[in-house]
Length: 389
Image (cartoon, rainbow, N blue to C red; front, side, top):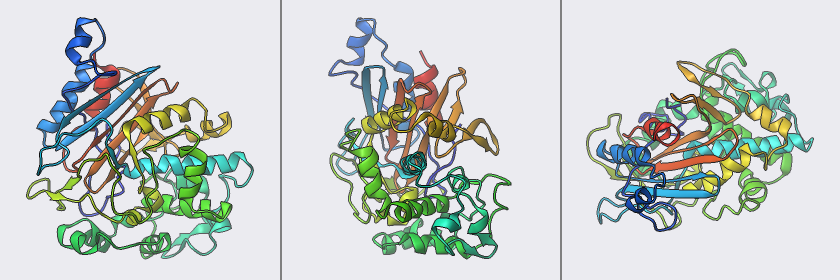
């Protein structure tokens, strides 16, 4: 099961997939062969799923999993199609909509501090911002933003936005444009809502642009500063950043590739450099797999939220058409074929598809990235790690 939560939902419909690859190195420098000789779990099912993703067309995969105090990493394919340099277990990459879980965590921390309520209307904090063509911020709560039941139109589904930023001609002309949160919300307000607030579910990146704006209104600081102060620094997430308008990905990192088309065929383009303000608080962050494992593990263990707020975050609504998943407050519950439940989020943005999940107790975590956005089975990787032998 793949919940399509990419920030790139326009013309390219980039799916958030799960897949990993590799000739892997496990804990420390032990090889898979050495681990097998010692009777240690070699995670062969996961390695096979990663290799299959590369065979399916993903340029390269990087993955790190943690179970208790032990961790292991694997890579496959290449990080650079021109030089054939391999991917690294330490690669930093754009995480797309995984950003949403960081944003939701900050909103819930503010609720725990008594500075806002999930039942507050959007208009209470952003008066007049959600207005027009049937949108009414006085009828939409912050909870409905966070669980995508607001009905607010998804700005990345706007056809002009899609042609401008997701297709080849538009992307190379506009990749360094700066978009403000207000401009992104205005794109959504030019359309009618998808449904009346609270009556259905539909993934909308606009919800989380608004959530980032609420954080700034409540705290007086940009949402990225709050994430750094409340999450990145306390957890020592040294590879995680909120880039704002910075167009590069800090090293170590690989290149990111896309077809920049409505099909998965045709030429492949290097899309590594872009201004991520087009994703804003819906999907602009950068991280690596080890940091994402640490974040989701800490979150599910209750290190970031009091029990009441964590319960709110884990209260899910059905995701239409996907019977084995529920969407909480930027936390997806997936039931795997072996009965295991994992909690986390997917993330997609130009040239990058990522997944980060953990078990309910936060003990067993997995995070990985494809540096291509048009192929690969992310579900197969998750299933292999948590259900494979």
